[in-house]
Length: 85
Image 1 (tube, one colour):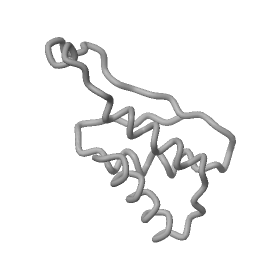
Image 2 (cartoon, rainbow, N blue to C red):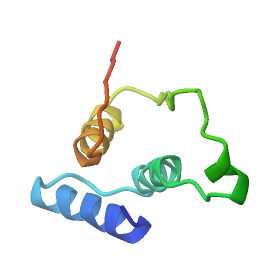
Image 3 (cartoon, rainbow, N blue to C red):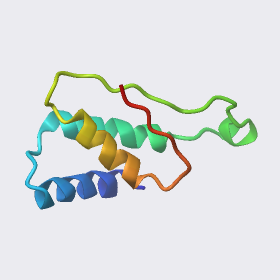
Image 4 (cartoon, rainbow, N blue to C red):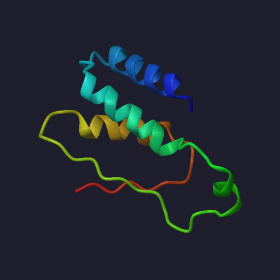
């Protein structure tokens, strides 16, 4: 998913659900996009990583972490597993 498409789709999601759009959430969306679409180097195509990709998102109560992760999770069209605690 392209950066602007992912970001624009998040903004549209917020507007549709009447959620506040704030710059911190947009920054997280941009980081998540870089996470799923990293810049590839020549050797990256020759040697596939053996590790699984994962990330940890933390923050204060009520800042939208769950909403962001649910949006991100639903946007991914790959086999995945979500763990929350």
